[in-house]
Image (cartoon, rainbow, N blue to C red):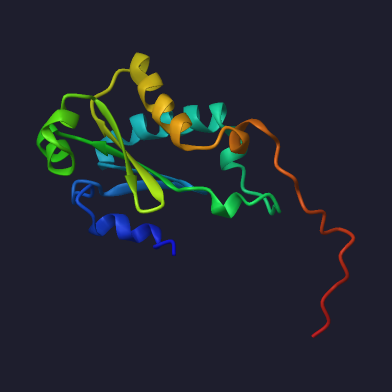
Length: 148
């Protein structure tokens, strides 16, 4: 059974330093408020690269079964080290399974040239068909109205 996204706040990955978030479908980006420009830029890059994964539509293609991806933008190395092993802390971007979902920890600041490190992790955990193929849309225009 899938736990609600709020359970991430009770995990070892979460920090009170995360006082802002972007939620879009299966994507959750948590960050410190002063990191908002970086978080928005990251979100728009992901949205552009994986447009169909984040497209909010009514579909019958199993979209709800996709894993959620939590991207956590850690403002300090100390906070980053609280969520990951010493070996993982050597990397700037770390990905771990979290229940049926995935956590991608990013030690900031990260240069724009290094966005590919995040994209690589996101693309690794999101099925390619969910962001490369236009999803099937249910046409409700021909549906009979409900009678109350």
